[in-house]
Length: 271
Image 1 (cartoon, one colour):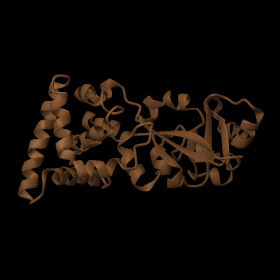
Image 2 (tube, helix red, strand yellow; image 1 turned 180 degrees about the horizontal axis):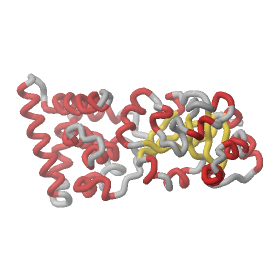
Image 3 (cartoon, one colour; image 1 turned 90 degrees about the horizontal axis):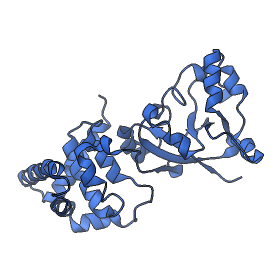
């Protein structure tokens, strides 16, 4: 049986770390489906003691867990013969009964659920080996307009229609977030960064050749009337970045990339 795609939620601040070095297993999920806790203590064999990565077979069920786990949507593939799967409702019932062993008693390899031809729509899938980078894909984060604040009217019209502009704007938004990785500017940067359709493999090269600072300036000019507050804030960031680049002997585009890179580097440092 071929590998099967499953879906995983995490906080948006973890998405750049996932892209950089693959799925960060237990650190990315709550105690409901992945973090070390009572559920692990009753898991069989090597699934016990947090040695597992959990996800859902249904993307619709994953979307229903956003408020609990975060808006970052990730998928990866699993070998259905090397997983255990059980219904989230069964886990909830076992929790209420105070006997989490019941949940694991109801678990079967995903292969067996699929062979039945029908399965619960809330099937939780667990594997006891690391998720390999080659099997991981980041999707468009599950944001609503309120998550992006004043940047929604600027970002939403372009993220799917103009990927070159979105990528350039992403760098400005990263600088604008100023290390607030739970704020609207960073979330807007994530919305620009990842979409459900993969980007063209030549997109980054085109961005570098065209100059991200010039592209971002053009985007802000085009959408001035649509999102005046957001444009004003990001224009100030661009102006400051030009001055910073000049003071450091760089072209504006290079300065923008350096500053956004510094922000991402700080994301990986201990808080």
